[in-house]
Image 1 (tube, helix red, strand yellow):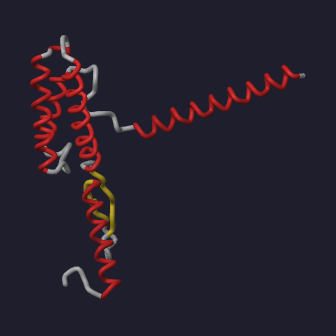
Image 2 (tube, rainbow, N blue to C red):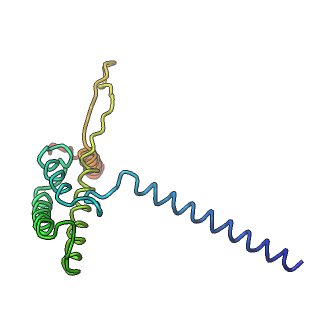
Length: 167
């Protein structure tokens, strides 16, 4: 009887651990979906840098990247390019340089991942007030957030003192 209770206990805990591990894997997968890093380890660094520089210039992919962040990314990419040219395929790279490269990659990944998400274009079909005709309205995620914040500010201002946005 003791072995049966023990076996049941082990089986329940094993099942619970399996469910927990599956849940954690699904959560990590859902959070990481579409959030892959811009600079990925194991891929040729110089080719990735060229691709990013092309996307920075096209005006679409990272359209919501501020001027200061754009400058910071370009400077960081320049440093990474220098390291990539000096140490082909990372051969002979000292540990201190590897650390600097990883830190620079993280800076680029954070800034560009957020800018890419903010620059995503979302289109909606809307009817103008008093019309049955629908039009397509497109704006970036960041533009929509700014519009929402402005509307909230205007509403709060109007509720406080009856002032409109034009006053």
